[in-house]
Amino acid sequence: MTNLHDELEPFVAKIIEIYEQEGAVIPVGYTAQDINKGVPNLYDNGFDIMFVRLLQQISMGLHSLNITMTFREDINKLFEELTAITQKYYRISSQFLLEKGLLVRSPYVSMPKSVEFVTDNSYLGGGVINPFSEKRTLNTVEVSHLYKAIESNLTGVQLILGFAQCANDAEVKKYFNEGAELAKGIIKELSEIMIQENIPIPQTAGGNTTRSTVAPFSDKLMMYCTSIFCSFSMGSNSLGTAFSLRNDLSAKMTIFMKDIFEYAHKGAKIMIKNGWMEEPPQMVDRKQNI
Image (cartoon, rainbow, N blue to C red):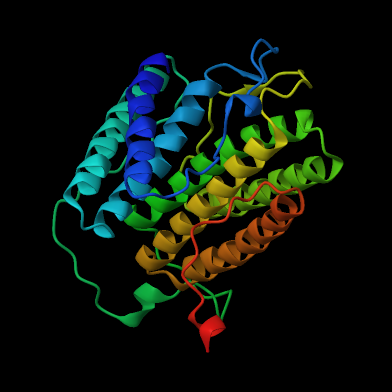
């Protein structure tokens, strides 16, 4: 974690330098005031590295997306370097957790011996219109998305339960508890699909919330982390919907996205109410001059 911090810190200075060169105001972001050092551990059993690993997943996607939206060579290079760092530490985090027995591997897949083509429309069926209709076996792409969704939500439940345990604001505490229940519901429904297919369900061996009720982070920072994970979850469900060819899976993922969006929207209102949501730069309102 120290190495990751040391590699990322210079990029903050680089981004600030770019803003200053362009005459742009520097975002406030999050400062030392949002971190409470020297307090008891809120998590143990490898959860710190599990958290870092999930952040690297999110960062890889964001940096790759940012590269596609930039044209300046220096900014493209900056995001390329950040992408390389996130890939490196995702690999390191995964290997650390596997070696410590804190990360469960994905289900084993028997290697295909021949090429198969879809022969009729029943391949797309999944019981949306007729819940009693026969469903085909899940394919490996669908299992991958289900597994990753369960794994991410397991980490999310531990994270948000810890936040709920130590949050100072009563409304924020209630919001975190609601999020934990939402994540548990998603885990339950996706696990039932895998159980019906006789596929092992992910069970994260690591990551525990301690009994500490002393917040290591400000409510503002914890709300931001939750917001980031909601965005990541909606993106993951979108991919799951796009790559799932069984109708029942696509329908279920769509419902999850709706529930997560509504939860995230509620969180945004809490952040706005408390003055925690920093506004991105606005386009000039040309209508004022009309």
